[in-house]
Image 1 (cartoon, one colour):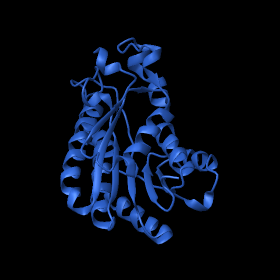
Image 2: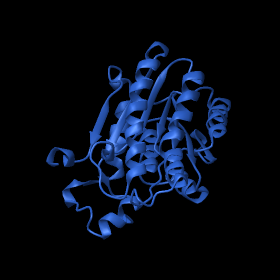
Image 3: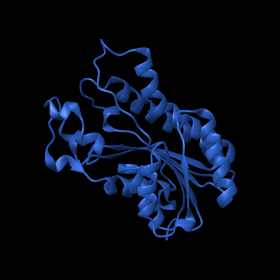
Length: 243
């Protein structure tokens, strides 16, 4: 199995893409540190995994910088090392640019972007034998829609962070890549006011499943991707190709 003996941290592990990543990586042998602010959602994720002794659960707010250091310390205390980080945690707000407040921008940037930056800093200082960082961005980083300005900006910032991390991480043996999902069948998509109002129209063939994204994340983390760094891996069923 590709991840036997490796420890992977996953933020936003309580559902959707994060939960699918946890299941995929666990099935392939990884020891996991699952992070989410929703304790009940984390418990559901943990219940789907076959070997709980290989799982550490942490209920925390990833937008708080000190929590990233605490998560790395707990992972190393439990498993002795960290080999990869998957930054999935995300938040959305639906408001026009004429209505967004500074607090709105700060909240969305904190969860979607700052949190990934905090975990990147810890990875650079604590992953002594190298490893892999995967940032789950979105095709909103390239082609967006009305009322999601902060989310799109944060996801675009993640792609830039990945490129910088790839450059600075290379001497440390750390690879960094972005995965850009399109529409994925998660609560965030199903509850989207843009979809309900018809501002975003989706072809059913363009809607993927969380496990589709988890497969790409697993590849990016794995040694099979040893020559892949600083890349944007689009997984959108061809949606961008049609825009």
